[in-house]
Image 1: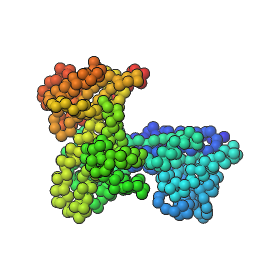
Image 2: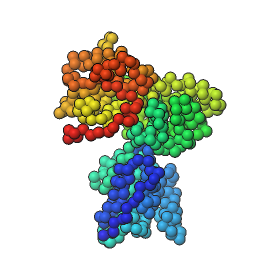
Image 3: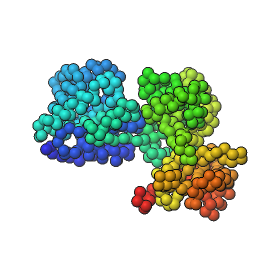
Image 4: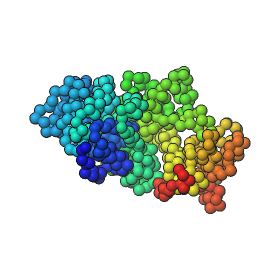
Length: 502
């Protein structure tokens, strides 16, 4: 049996990702003999490749990133890069992936041979037999000498149907699966180094939590005060000379293959403009309602949009754009792309001021509501809602003249197979201070829900406000009538665990 590896230090530049790093190191350092296959997946642009390049460097492993090419060119590239890595006199000539993988496994050094193949969906597109070759190589290695260095093969790719097919078959030939999820909004603020909490929310509504955008030129001088935001947008996000201007388009174009790209772009534009339900999207596209589920499924499968059930009507699904930059692009950049292409600084500022209301209303406001739901689900201190949340969703109420029709944050407890009790109803306001009028609307909604048979015995009303709260609402908070959650609470409230067995 191969000797265990020495401890692998976590790179200093790796922001967060402690659990992911430890999991990968444990996979590589597993002393069991024989080959093992690990899959790393997750949305595009959230640090998978950076993480795996760091792992390869730290373990003496070999990293290869696939890109569009014919299979023969890719195999030559692998051979050339592996020859440099392994200090071979000349690149080998490999005619197929089985030959290449067996050769790399045999010439590896150290307690374990670490091979990382990144961009797996592109590699499989070029070489449809690659998964079968990997499985065959692992079977061959299991029959090999027991004292040989074990192979640790890591396969990586962004969320695509190829990765989903591999994951669906993982019980038979994959030893470990790691999903690199986006950093949460709190980690994102630390990544960007923004002290001002409302400003951090606004920046997050534009670029989300992708480390790739933080280390883009747009992240060289991130805004630090509210007055910095508009100049930063104009200088770094709306300037065609810089990469961030084009990245959202490439994000969508790169994963739709030869599918109906126009319909995909228009669907994302519809969702980014606040049309979150299939019927609204069909109207926007002027296409039959029967076309929309297929388009939504295509985008969802690729991790570009996500659907969440309605808190009060589980059969009704609300869609949102998963990557903030994609939503910003389709709401602000895409409608103005040709004007921005040759605009000077003054014209860019004028375009942004015209588009700013669309951003605040259609992008930043819904994004803030989503952040509030994330806080309620993951970061609200124990006891905030009386019990651990089982779900946190938005909800739609039956339309009644004079009554509210939507609730931004609906927290439910466990229900033993049926809808759980309502632990909290909340309204989220982005641009305007929250007032007692909003609180009164929540009270009306609570009465309506009680008449519909909902369990409201423990419901706590909540107001989430990015622009502050009226004096009357502060008085209601002092009387225990409402929970008020500001950006400071969103970012700074202590994380605690519920002591109820969860």
